[in-house]
Every structure is written in C-alpha cells, then in structure tokens.
Image (cartoon, rainbow over all chains, first blue to last red; front, top):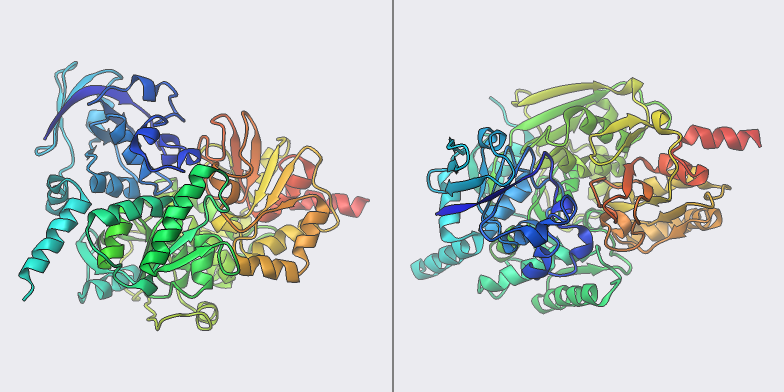
Length: 170
Length: 426
C-alpha cells in the first residue's frame, strides 16, 4: 500500500476532543463527523483538506477519549495516514481497527514542514519527503498487526477467522 | 522473576502460566461495556460480523449516560437505536432510573465488574475498575463489537509502573489531588501503554470512592490500566454486590516494575490542573484571583457519595456566588438516593446550586452546562482539553469537590480554607 499527499503538521498531545469535539457525537455518520474534523485546532481544516493528505503530529497523538469517531472523521475527511512521534494507545488500536494507517516515526516528523509532499509505503514503513528528498523508516508493525491491516481492519479480519473456524468445525 | 497482578490476570485469561511485557496475547474477557455514544457505533460494527447473539448476555452491558435524558432529536435517535438493540439481544441495559447513571459508577455499584477480571469498555475511563483489582481498559467501538461477539480480545501485555504513596495528607488534600499531582509529575504520556499500580499506606487509607477517583484518571497519564491491591475494604465493597465468583491476584514480592516511583505526599496542596492538559498542575493558592463562570461537581471521577459529602461540608449554610452557575450531579441512582437521605441535596439547592440527573452532564461539552466563548469552569472532572466542555476558547480547571465548592461560593478559584475563614469571621 502506497500513499501520496500533502502534510498537515500539528504539535504534541492532539487529543480526540480536538479531533472531533464531544458536541458532535450524536451521529455516527462519517461525512458529518468529517465536516468537524480537527475543528478545535484548525477551523479551516475540514474545508481545505484534500483526499490523500497526511496528518503529521508530535507526541501522544489521539490522547483522551476512546471515541472511534476520531479516526473515522480523519479517514472520512480524506486523510490517507497519520505519522506521529508517538500515539495514545486507544487511538492507535482504533485507527488500525478501522483501516486508517498510522506510523510512528519521530525522525520523519522532525523533518516535515506544513505542505510538504510526502509518499508513504506501508509494507516497508518508508516515508519519503519529496521537498527535501529525505527518506525515513517508521517503527515496523508486529506481524499480527500487519495481518490486520492487510485484511482491511478488525471486522474483516474477525469475519474471516469466524468463517474459517466454522468451516473447520466437525 | 515474579509477576505483577496485571501480568497474572492476563496470563490466566490467555490460558498461559506466565506472560512477559510486550507479548501479544488473545484473552477471554469477563465483561464488555459501551455507552450511548460508543455503542451506537459498536452495534453497526457488530452487524458486519454476521453473528446473531452476543457471547454471553450477562456479560455485556450498555450504559446510556452521555446524552441522557436526550437533549435533542439526534441524540434521542441514537439512544433509541442503542436501547432497542440491547432489548432485542437481551443484554444488560441501564438508562437513568433506580440503578442507572454514569457507567463507571454503575458497574462497580451493581457488582458487574470484579477483582481478577478482564473488563473492556468502549470508554477511555474504563480503567476505573482497576481500583477493584481488575485489569480493566478502554477500547474503541470496533474492539468492543468483536469482544461482544466472541468474548475475546487481542492485548499487548503492558509493563507495570509502581507508584508508592506515603506520608500524611494535609487538610483538603483528597484522592483527586493525589492523581493530579501524579500526572503533573509524570506527564500526560508518562505511563503510555503501561499498567499503573497504585500502592502504599496513603492508598490503603483511602475509601473505595477515593480509590476509584485515582484509577479513573490513569488514562490521563496514557496508561492502559490502573490497578490497586485487593484488601478488606475492597472485599467489603465487592462481596455484597458480586454477581459472579471472583479471584484475587497479588503482585509477587519479586515482581518486575518497569518504573518504580515513590511519593511523599506530606507537602502536597490541593491541586488545580489549568488549561489545557491534566498535567498542568498548580497548587490552588497560586490561582486564587481567577474569576469563574461555572462550577461542575460530578462525573465518573468525582460523582460518588463521598465527593458529594465533601462538597456539602463546604456549601452548608452558604450561597453560590451570584455570577456562577453551580451544577452538581450525583453519579448514579443509588448515589442520588443516598444524597437525598443524608440531606445533601437540600444543602445544595438551598445554597443555589442546580442538581442534575445522574449522567455525564457537562463533562464532555455536548449537553447541559456547555461553556460559551471565554467562559471559565472549575470542574471535578478529568479533562481540560481545548473545547472539552464547549467553545474552543472556554477554559476548564480540574479540582477536587471541596475546591470546586469553595470556588462556587467565592466566584473565583478558592481553597476550602478561605470559605471556612469567612464563615468564622461572620
């Protein structure tokens, strides 16, 4: 899997209340959620984000609430993947589960400026910055998580497993 | 090398003799929970699995508490979808009424979460139940849906951070101040991916209500879980309530701690976490001139009976400042009834506070007590993020119930001692 897009750069501790504020959680519609994505930190984001764009952030991205609406709103806004120095654990799980790729790579984050054209290869974890010509390698996923990502998230992965166990039953 | 209680609980649920931090394991979960917001997504994901029934109807609960009673038609529709699904599948369902209220107060009260268990909840403050000696962690709606269907979940075994508290608490320093000071010291990602183990004589001396306040906020340091030892107080709380048999696990004497911290709490003051991180902790005395617009006393952090008693001690015979909205919400039906029986509700209403129905209330900025531009709130909740309780320019100051009550009376951030001094002077 390969993604190419412009970088949106944010700081440390971008929490899920900023990604999608609580007052919008009376819906599960991804489009409605996307219309308010990142509103708390950049009110222009939902209007200006382009399909394929990449969110680049500092430490502890996605901290706070377990609301899956946060990665859903980013994905529905067109974000192809998130690169951060580190992730809050529930957000990391949720993103992988719903099929939003997330990469941990502090060195790449340090060397990315807003608007940089980035290219990401998920299988190798390579992050290439077309403006600077630099390439970085993200922390590799454990094999189990790669399997989840390849399956398209936890639901397709579990469906396949349930089908297999049923087929295998005597 | 010995094991921590977190490792022992995970090993037992994975069918293994031992586990190591960092290992990925699949565990059998004892209980799965979701609220009206996260269940709405979970039931959609559950449908995609093409599984008819949940793994065990007695071990899955929805607790509607965020938008309850519904403030608008969309929230009402969302709650209806969740309620109807719960009824159709025959799972446990709480929405207000005698036993309902905030998920993290309801489930321990009802004896549905127990020592030695693995509990997952589609709410980040699910870590609260660690005060009962359970391994209890927040997940998203998709994880919850899969666990509802299969009773199973993938987990990475966390390393344990041990936090040992000793010394003598000064007046008005509560469990809330212990956890705020702790997060102030280690930071909002200081325990990222770890299990926090809170121990020492100061923790042992706390009531169960105080212990829940501490484990509730483990997530605010990035932790996966926050655990406490099971002692007589835990067993006295759990035994009359428990809906299932349970097992008690303890740390081995030679258990391995990734980080071992020691806190002498004797010099700690009542704490305030200023915007916009729970780790921005300052002693209350440093902020005494800051005017406020709202006070909220309640939530899964500080909505228990002991919190209400503390607020009532300050508010008794006093008046809420004319420029302050003071909202007080007992965290559950039983807590509400207890507060009524003890006369606490009279004290609150007499003082000019608004007493709300058991729910999350203003905590997540989507319901009652939403803050307008620039408004400032002293809140006994757990998060002071940008826009958490309303407008992005509003401000939330996290504090204990006594500090919140004192601030409500004086119309500015205040320590309880100031109110008492004024009362004596009259």
